[in-house]
Image (cartoon, rainbow, N blue to C red; front, side):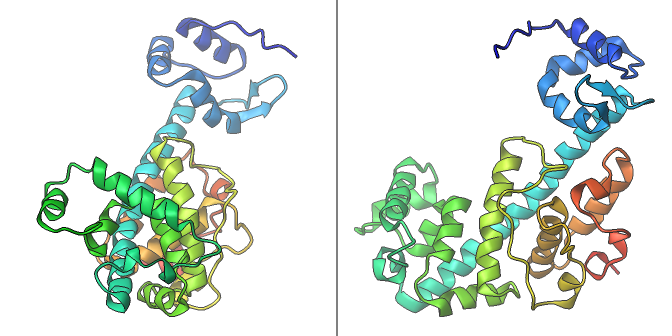
Length: 299
C-alpha cells in the first residue's frame, strides 16, 4: 500500500476535524493552535476521544478544548516528572560516588574489577567519561583537570558528567552486591528493585525529554515492584496495572519522600489531576480513590 494523503492547510485540518464530529467553537483559534502543535502530534491525544477508529469519528459532544486540555495536562505532567527524576538522578549519583569511593578510593571508577565483567560495558563507560571530560565547559572541572596530572578527576567529580542512562548501568554493573545494597538502603529499597527502577526511569526520562506522550502509555520497560519496604509505598501500588504510569508516579513520590520530605510533588500531582478533567486517572492505571492511599497523604 502506498501513502497517498496530501498535506492539508491549517484551515483544511480544522474542517477535517469538524467533519469527523469534533466540536470547534473558534475555528481561527483552533487553526492557530495547529500552527504550533502538529496535527499528527495532537492526534495522539484525540485518539482516545474517537468512537470509530476506522472512520475517525469522534464521540458525541467531544470538543477541541477537551483535546487541548489533555495535551496541556500531559505537557505539565512531563515537567513534573522530569523535575522529580532530576532530583532522583542527583541523589543516586551522590550515593554511587560516595559508597564506591569509600570502598576503593578517589579513582575507583578506573578499577575495572569493581564492575561486572560479563554484563557491564566498562570500555564504553570509560569512553563516555573521557568524551564528557573533553566536551565539558564546567569551569570547576576544567580547573581540576589543569591542576592535577591524573587520567581523570576523582569519582565524585566524574559522576557529575554521567548521563542518567550510564548512571543506571553503573549502579547495576557493580560487581560487589554490598555496594549496591548500601546505595539501595539509602532509598529504602532492595538493590534489585532499585536497579530495575533506575532502568525504567531512564526510559521515562527520555520520553519526557523528547516531549513524547506520557499520558495513557503502556511501558515496554517496567519496574520490578517491591515486596518489602515502607508500608505507605507497598500499600499504594497498583499490582494489577504494572505497565501503566501510576506505579511510576508512586515510585517517584517514594523517592521524593526520602530525598526531600518537604517536597510538593504530591500536592502538584493531585492539583494537576483536578484541573484537567480530560485526563481520566483510570487510563493511566490509577486505582479508585488513589489520593486516599497512604503514600499520597500530605498531612
